[in-house]
Image (cartoon, rainbow, N blue to C red):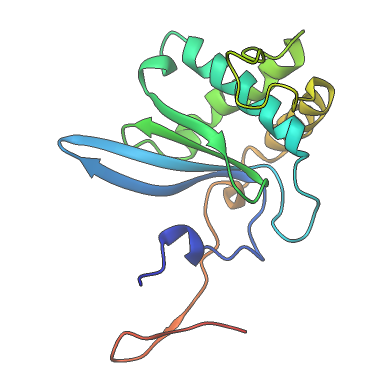
Length: 174
């Protein structure tokens, strides 16, 4: 099987930031998946599950209510590794092009008095939320983004180099 693009990112070198994960063409439409990375993989603790769930609800609600972005947003959801989120948008914007909306979305968490969509009718596990911790992680990421807004490392994936034989076999570090 082919290695999917997100597994070719050097997770030992990635820093928190906003990265283009992949760009696809579906029919005549360009769709871009972005990696919104809050934590350094394998080097710092992942985001608390209940806080991650709350951030998912809060930011998805924010984005789907923004007059412009609600028409561009296809998906907002957590990474399985709990180090960040994926956002899928219509179009082919750069990571820098979505910096402002990501910053605003995370800033909006500070204003929340409750997490939307947390009744048993609205949520698959409505008891697993933590607004206080969601606010803490959001504030930490906002501070980081503001401090590093001009650092190219928060916009460009570090790539791993894989040796490939003439027959196409990939070699991986053990």
